[in-house]
Structure formats: structure tokens, C-alpha cells
Image (cartoon, rainbow, N blue to C red; front, side, top):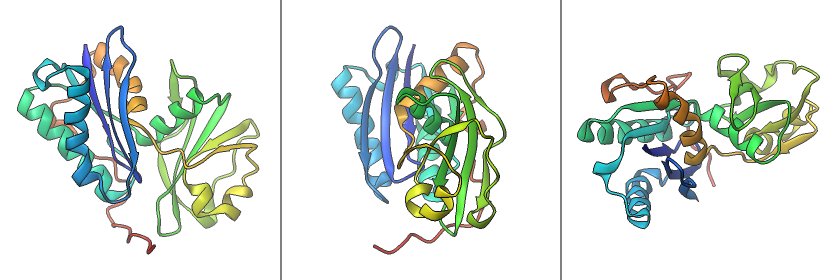
Amino acid sequence: MKILALETSTNACSVALWQSGEDTAELFAVAPRQQTELVLPMVEQLLQEQGISLQELTGIAVGHGPGAFTGVRIAVAVAQGLAYGLNLPVVGVSSLAASAWQAYAAGAQGLVLVAQDARMNEIYWGLYKGNTQVLEALSPDTLVPVEQLPELPTAVAWATGSAQEAYPQACAALGVEHWLSPGYPSAQAVAALAVAEFQAGRTFSAQQLEPLYLRQQVATPKST
């Protein structure tokens, strides 16, 4: 099984190749608003480096949100195009779950809060438990105002995500001991979470794949 994974829902752009019995290969770059130009060349570069052709792939995995409207749309559109052209099954993975997986890979234990900056004084919020082998969402991913952050269970000692940088006071008030920031989700994590779905046959066609926006309003990019 050879799975190509894509993730562009945040300021990062990454692609990964998961192969049975092999280490996952990945290209990762923090490149705000450059995902459109980067993602397909990165796919081409990665496959060339691994000596794999598009025709050898057995599936496409994609971080389908929540995240930046344009970033989510780019990843889903590229995944749909590749899957349709190659007649491949596709799996959509929560971008917040991918961030949680990375936190566990970095040593997080117990419950993990994922809080990614959603702009417009809002946060993409998810609470997870598990490890890099089994990951469970304790509630659906949601969008919450910074002024109305939910109260966390006392067991939450780890958090990850860019919300800490965007809203430091609100995040400090949560009382989380360990915070991994910016915690951008990666294609490697998307691939790892998609494997079980492919193995179980829980896949979609290109036409069935849908983005997870959580809101339809587009956030205006912050000035730099």
C-alpha cells in the first residue's frame, strides 16, 4: 500500500508518502499563502525522490480541515484531482486530529487540547485522547470565540496549536502545563491516521470528499 498525503490547512504546506514496511517520507515547509504554488511541485519532488510514480499510488489522504478556508480548499481540490485522475480512493482526516497525533509523537500524554488560530477572534478547538497508534476525539471539532473558551478537564496537561501565539492571555488562562506551538498539522500525521481507514475500506471517491470548514465566512489575512 502506498498512500500520498496532503496537508495545507494552516501556514504550513506538507506532503508525505506512506509505504507498507517503510518509514514515512515527508516534505514540510512553513509558507503562508504559498500553498497553491508549492503543493503540486512538492508532490512531484517527493515521489521523484522516493522513486515512485503517481500510477503506483493506492490511495490519497488529505487533511480536510478545519483550518484556513483557502488552505483547506487547496488540499481538498488537489486530492480530488489526483484521486479522480488516477481512480484512487481517498480519506479525509481532521487537521486537528493530525495536530493531536503530532503532539503524542512529541511526547504528550493523557488528554491533548488542540487549539489552532481561526482568525476573527476565534479558535478551532478539539480535545483528544490516545497515542500515535489509537486516537479518539472526545467531541466534534468546533469553532469557539476566544472570549468563550470551554472549561477544560483537570486532566488536560498538554495542548498544541497556534492559538497560543495569537491569543496568549486567553490560552494562559486555560492553565495547561505543556503547550506545543505552533503545532501545525503535517502530512505525515495525516498519513498515519489514514492508514487504518484504508485498511478497513472506509474510503471515499473523489466526488464524495468534502472539506470541513466549520464556517463559511472567509477570515481576512492578518497584515504583516
